[in-house]
Length: 495
Image (tube, rainbow, N blue to C red):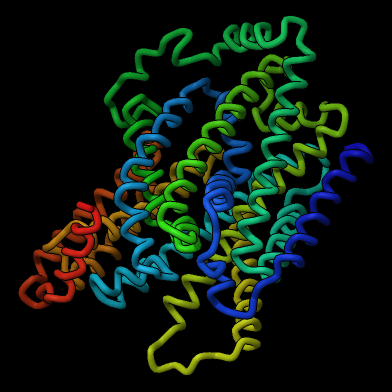
């Protein structure tokens, strides 16, 4: 990296630190986790997008295009499809409940054991996500800077943890807005350079990508793309169905995302913010797809690993763009880490620590506990980041580990909202069975199509919960209060 590149990266880090100090709000728990329920649609939408985007997508999307072609485009229409149930069913339902933790609903509908099971699974899931984001960004930044990726993991995660501890979710969401702008600028600048330095412009880059066979499954057409076989890596059907389930898990059963709906000043602001997230995500992922095709044309060594070619392309960028892309990678990573830490703390402090008989802690004790827990979670994330790379390539990690492990949460939420027959004991037993089965499927089944891991885990958990509820119905009948929560859910859905 040149001195200009290094200066850009340092300026980004200094700017984020300064903003966190300016937006410091830790006097009340509502500010730490809910921003006083006063956020507008603009920061909500960009915060949801950049939080879920992360460095995993920044690296995995273009490298997937470079290695396998344009199969990833099948996931883009799903953003619009999944917005229908999210904006019409889940946001109206949960925003009206005025919760801090999404999983408090499961205690109302079932019992406290089910709530704690879901909260524990969420924290484990988010820790895996943060570890993956740290690993992805550190690996690519390591190829750009020559710094060992282990050191980059520690620095990136440490800085994100520090400003998260300083400011709470208000700081997290407004820094996400800046990080999105920086991310988009870096991607757009790199793509512009790739096109401008090619003699025939975009036409030449596209021709080279087609010649390398990376325009599949469209040019030449891949018949396997329309196959129904669940063992084909990516098909039209696995892409649509599997991505829909994975996205629904993120947008409807993930405390990190739903917490942003809770910060909205109104239900309308939450819905508008979600649609803004959809638009921002589509723009960013399309630019990354084009960037992957551009790197194919710009980097002649087709035999080199995609990660190495990506790093070589970034290192060769002029005019400080290497530093801008590096800062964009840091922004994408920190947005995942800061949001993950804050949401894990929200779940831990409201689901596990709060009790009706416990005396409320003073502000300074809350702040001290908040900092200590962030430090503990950061250490665990570091440990996971050092081993997560053994799971496979980044695109496989996203679909097998990240999307697959979180799927049981969606099953529990859906069971609670739409099933009259589900009881507390059945949800708890079935939730445990589904969680263990999901871990076994995600980590132990190598032959399944990538996008089907989330589908398989949701179906297994739902089946386990229904069977367990049927077997324990006599010993644990559904109470009138639990039926009332089911009626409430269906009434909100109908409205």
